[in-house]
Length: 219
Ligand SMILES: *Cc1c(COP(=O)(O)O)cnc(C)c1O
Picture (tube, protein in one colour):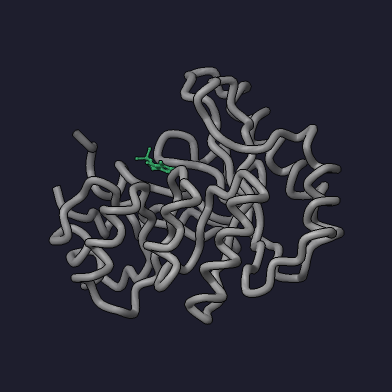
């Protein structure tokens, strides 16, 4: 299945105006992305550095690319020349490396701070308990050319919607806890995927990352 534009429109029509859809195209062939592009989609989320770089090379230059996967510091340099936003910033050292690469490329890179809200051990990110420490680190370490736009998180893969709702609520709390110290551009809460976006929106999401409901199931 290629990009399901009618479903995209249907979800968009249901959303409050302050919520944006980021189509997640990881593992999907360039033809599917071009199909979406021809329908007016100008931004995509990707998880893997090599895949993102090779897609960006062959696709139109007016696309805004979001890196939503786990990023190792030594790979920032590959995406820094063109990436619009990096969602998974989970350490000060990664933030600093993004700043270094932004300077090298003389361009602004937007980032989101990733929080660990799920029960699962394997997910990366800071925890709610780290808020004071993060505030201090950010105050002591201004990183020019990096604009911190907000927070990102993933809820547990469980059926129990009360668990999912609680976790999204926690991410909203992280956002609220940081907001007073951040710039006016700190306005994004990236939460919600194909299976849980309606709950995320109810809990305050401003950006939902949708893969399989738009591009079909991944192998
Ligand atoms: C793959 C992925 C998505 C999209 O997942 P779907 O369930 O297919 O919508 C969203 N966010 C992140 C971080 C992902 O890795």
